[in-house]
Image (tube, rainbow over all chains, first blue to last red; front, side, top):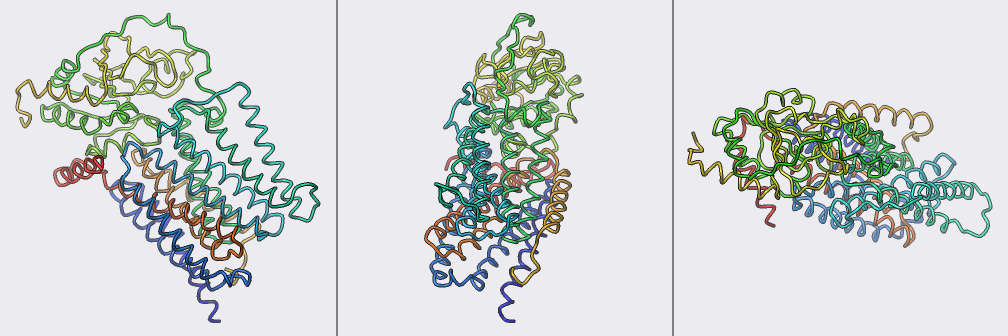
Length: 483
Length: 117
């Protein structure tokens, strides 16, 4: 009877963890309760991890002699893994958040894959269902690991350009089929079928190698602005892999937590794809840049560069300014200066609002986080559907480092690759200023008709430097900022 | 968990179905402004995989299993701790105009300090 106690404790701890995760996520539905939400979920995690040490009481006979070593290894792994990640998570700049999330995603996927590897190599999974589910979790986890690492490298600037070669799709499909074929062979061999030439461990290693290669190949051709979809989908993948391995280990907490995350990731993936008016398949398997190029001829007007200071002073005398931030703001680390400028305008009596496009930046909601970091109160921040009609009343739309999300071609030009994508109606404002590093095109590599409009002026330069000039110019007016 | 009735067949599918549905509904209510913390928060939640890693490592009987199990716990722990750290940091930054005077200095000091490091 005494031997039941550790097991009951683990069961109760896992139950508590599953409840606290869901309750914590539920509390994350409002910025007011969200900080307590993550704390609640954190308590759940702590309880589950501490209880997992009680597995020591129920290890199999084969593992008994190694128990002390294994316990020591577990403590080292926990301390080193958690310590390093905690330290990096506390230190990382807010602008680097997408690559950090990609990295943690990959770690989760890798852990799920490793669990599957232990089960498979140790012949612990038995029955066809167990083996198939283990392999599915292994495949998804491994793809998530290597794919997330590539996503991290892209976001961090280690890999600069999407890699695209002719016949890539066909090659990727072949790698996938090979992986599935090896998986099928593993199932066949595990059930006692005779597989000539290859021993079981070799097959399993080969399976993992193929899955990892596929993750790399799948992510390499995907471009920067599609990253919100990619990060969401790997989040869903890792959740799914964790859920499946939870089934193999007969641990309902893993099953529930994994599936909740899988569903959440899927929901976000679909939201992001919808915000780009593309299907998920289109994002993953189509090379966006290769779609028919737009003819340059049908855009009239010219690009009109102006000084940053003049633009700043113009906004000082406006009634309402709507700011559209994009990835360029994050690259320039301009969020603090932007809010400084906004406060200056506010103190001069200008109404300032922020308009956020769902796919602005490199992960869902990245702009909201950057603005929050700078101290912008969230009641000034509006999402696309809530603010789009207001551009017509605004005196100025200030577009900073955003491009495709304000391209009116999405509304009018059927031949444009971004046709049908919901955009922010910045062109409806009486005056538009576009802060941009140079005359280059956006991610979609198409000309932005907004820039050529009669009401639009271009302010060239690094977003942070431009904002500094704007602040100086407005301050230079000599009007008391406190007025 | 051997004392419990094993989770198999349809019971497993029921658990998966209900959990997926719960996740979908809970997450569907999160406003777009919180999408990044939500993503890192759910990222943190799948860090529970570390518990599975612990099970695998404690039951390891060969060097190979120990090595892979160690790897699983290491990555899982990193996933959980890192996910928590970044989510907590981001959520602490969201504030309304009402709180601004109170938190303004606070909100500014922390991020700028971090950037220097």
